Image 1 (tube, rainbow, N blue to C red):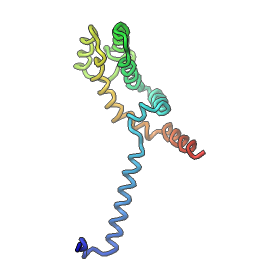
Image 2: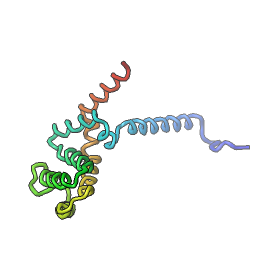
Image 3: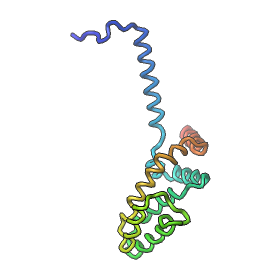
Image 4: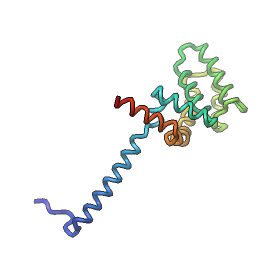
Length: 161
């Protein structure tokens, strides 16, 4: 027969413990309600809002690079691959590019070498680096912004109508 695990704990302490557990769970639930960067990038409405937000902060080069890499990976023609890789390099990777992204010298050199015979994965390392930067920096700021909060409120209102 099972015994009571905490026989010396008073009822008031158990109530306090339950209250703290509920508060902890609700904070976890609130956090889980925030969309991930992956979700933002897959949802056209949130992607547009995120892109617009980054433009307003003059920091949209990362999202533009990420989208260019996704487009590049979908390229079927070998000729198109060469020209797209060159454009991406000139726009985002080469030193003093108009939309230069923040990746280290090693990654830039690796990409430069791969431009001779670019493969679908030649920008993967830089894209992953940019994704992590957005995930740690841009995305949390966006999720706290008025733009996101208005969009979230608007989407809730639409669901109730």
